[in-house]
Structures are given as structure tokens and as C-alpha cells.
Amino acid sequence: MNEGVRVEAAAARIVPALRDMVRDLDLTTDELMAFVAWLGDVAASGELVLLSDVLGISRMVDDQTHAGAGGTASNVLGPFYVAGAPWIGNPGSIVRTEDDGDAITVRGCVTDAATGAPLDGAIVDVWHANSAGAYSNEDSTVGRWHLRGRQIAAADGSYSIDTVRPLHYTVKHDGPVGRLLETLGRHPWRPAHVHLMVTAAGYAPLVTQVYVANTPYLDDDTIGGVKPELVASVADGSLRFDIALAPEKAALAAAAG
Ligand code: DHB
Ligand code: FE
Image 1 (cartoon, rainbow, N blue to C red):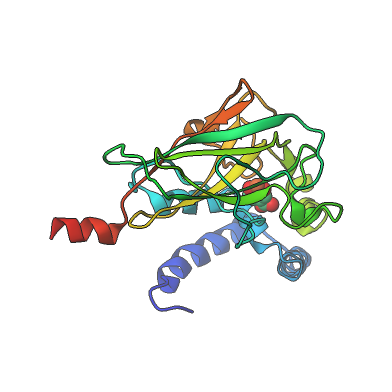
Image 2 (cartoon, rainbow, N blue to C red; image 1 turned 90 degrees about the horizontal axis):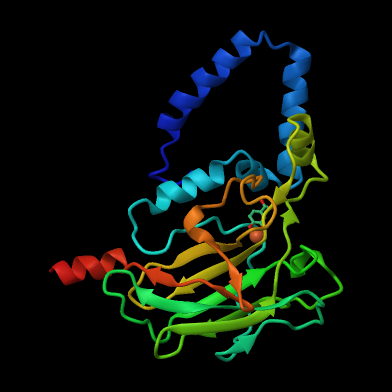
């Protein structure tokens, strides 16, 4: 375990809570063994983060990590980010395999959250599911970088990325976390969204998502990721999303002397 991870404080909360549950529900050996086998299956299936996602814990921790950061709200990274996406021009397209969905342009301005000044040279890294709700990592019929790319903001801070409108999407639900959702009577859907990772020298990196207004599951995201300020409408073929970056803590400290 890393130093600075509050293992003792967490254990002091988790252990009594679990013991209370075991006592209150009068759990049996069979039930304990079934739970242990299921949790082992979650780990063996690589679904521990997915479990944290569907329990709403990933969203909470992301909020807590960025509380008071200023600028555009953050959102969870999700499992489908791939570093090193190809550079595209500005404007540019990330449609690399034919997709007969609705053409849209994701566009907006990247600015300094404190001053509103445009951030010439900010890097906008985007990725999202296609018009059938699949990420390129999940669909062997499309290229690795389909619907993924990096773009450099123009002198006025503008970015403009031609793509297709993503569809709502199910998290992985063919394994032990899917069995949990089914047992709880919950669905596995996430609303349509576009992921963005935005960086600029001297600013705190922003990982967020923009959600498409008036689409299914916005009010019932299975990972509880939606924030009202991250919902944007498609108008005249554009999904407009402005991004404000907060100065890096180190930059703020230096400015304060
Ligand atoms: C998950 C999937 C996503 O597309 C996302 O944005 C966040 C989480 C998931 O499978 O848990
Ligand atoms: Fe996603």
C-alpha cells in the first residue's frame, strides 16, 4: 500500500459497518461463501472498477478529488480511454471508418477559468462510442482510433471536431457485475456522451464528459455520472461545449509568491 493511503481510517469505518450488516441480516455460511466467490469473480473478471462505477463510488470520488477546483466540472475517465490518439487538424474529423449515424461537430472554446482568456494551444483529446453505442475497443470491425483524436485549440481557444452522434450505451453486464445489476433490478445503460481530456501548460488537466441533451437515461445513468452543467444540446449539427481550465495549484502558488 502507498504511504498516505488512509487504510486504518477506512478499515475503522468499513469493518464495523460490515459486521453490523452480517449481524443484522443474520448471514449464514452459505451466504458468506457465495459473496466471497462472487467478489473473487468480480476481481478475476477485471470488474472491480466497474463495480465501483455502478455503486456510484467512482463518481463520488471524482467529485471529492476535484471539489473546489474551479472551471468546468470533471467527470469519470471510464474504461475506454486510450492514450496517444492521432493528431487531427483544427477543424478536423475523428470519423475513420464509415458510420451512417448523424454527423455532428463537437465544438467550443477553451478558456482560463479565472480570466476568460482563450487558451491558444490547449490540447483537446476526445473519444466516444459510435452511433450504435460501441467504443472502438469493443468493435473489431473498426480501426483502433475510430472516434478518437487529439486537436490543438486555435489562437482564439476554439476547437472543432467532426464526428457522429454517439448512442446511449450499456456498461459490461455479461459478468458478475451484470448479475448484481440484474439481482438489484437495475439496468446497465449510460446516456450518450463524449469524453474529453483537456490539458494546457500551467493548468490543471481536466477529464470530463459532455452528455447529449434530450436523450435516454440522462436521468438514470447506471453509474450516476451525469451533472446538469455537462449536458449540451445538438443545435444546427453542433454539440457546443465550452471548457474552462483552472490554473494548476503550483502555478497559483508561484503567482502568490
Ligand atoms: C463505464 C463506461 C463508460 O463509457 C464510461 O464513460 C464510464 C464508465 C463503465 O463501463 O463502467
Ligand atoms: Fe464512456
